[in-house]
Length: 194
Image 1 (cartoon, rainbow, N blue to C red):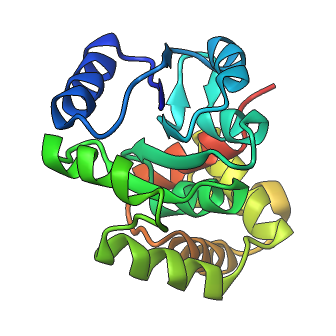
Image 2: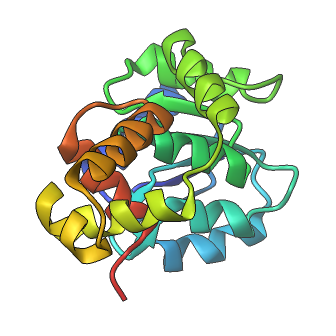
């Protein structure tokens, strides 16, 4: 397996969990998207990937791994980012607060099928059923990531604050979060500044 995580201490902890369990061997590690590209040639059975890497989005790593590699996303990202990672090809999700036993078990279990905690599975299924953000919702989310308040977003698009509030309610429902800070974080991950 390979580990793609930009925090060395976290990477060391994951490796220790896996090695102590003994059912998998870590054959490579990377802390960035660029460094992870070289690991794709190893054709690992399992890849454990953080979504927020020092030089980009972990979903980019998913795109260049071999199709046979089983991928677990390990992150504290909002459910919308997890859903996008699954759409990009991930087979499982672990919260960064997972125990050593949970990490080791997930690495083993993902070889047989998807690995999603029940509460996350329900959110992911709901997000798939609700669908993608509309183009207008994407525009509103981009404006939100620029630090605009609801009045400024409304002025930007020439629509009412009430309509902006409705768009934000729809975005929250689709992403499975009610916190503005999580919407902003998700928006920055999905629509990074040029």
